[in-house]
Amino acid sequence: MYGAPSYAPPAAGRTMTIDDVVVRGFMTLGTLVVSAALAWYFDLPPALAVPAALVGLVIGLVVSFKQSTNPALILGYAVCYGVAIGIISHIADEFIAKGIVLQAVVGTMVAFGGTLAVYALKIFRPTPKFTKFVIAAGFAAVGLMLLNWIASFFVGGGLGLRTDSPMGWIFSVAMILLGCFFLLLDFSDIEQSARAGVPERYSWLLAFGLTLSLVWLYLEILRFISYFTSSD
Image 1: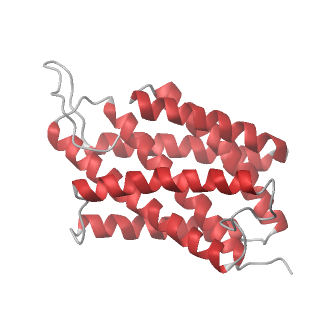
Image 2: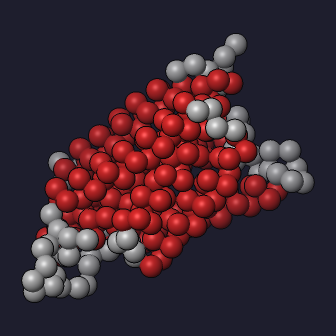
């Protein structure tokens, strides 16, 4: 998904603008938020969170690896992850602390705004080396979380990456920073694609990338806040 596009726009087709990505981004995020709100309102059982997330993950992988611009797939991802996030958020609000979800939403907005400011003000722009580093770090992070999950079947807390401990705090901060780095790549990708005059349909793929990064950020910020928040 990341990297300068290598195709030319079609002769008769409309080329993509940044506004197209903004509109598609609002549509995708709006679908996710509405799905999350409905899951929360109807108090869907926690058991549905895992299958919803798994279906969303499969759809996300298909979109990412096939570079699909199919709106149905991308909005389907938003619905699935919206349901999962709504259930997770409801559980966090009920059993961890009232207001924790609002804190996580505000934290995500601050992280998004701060990262956008860094990019817009040209304080930092992703380089090819930085892009490769972030992508490699993303794969490494997913691999570590998988190992931690497998280890948890044999040792309480697994590798300690997702526990309320100094190691868990450091890992969560690293994951939040990684989410911000992915946002930087998203902004760069959007700008480069608009300049290259890619077909308008690719705005869906770029909106998907933004949504993916924001979902990552929200869940990691929610987890990090949970370490220092209690209903007691």
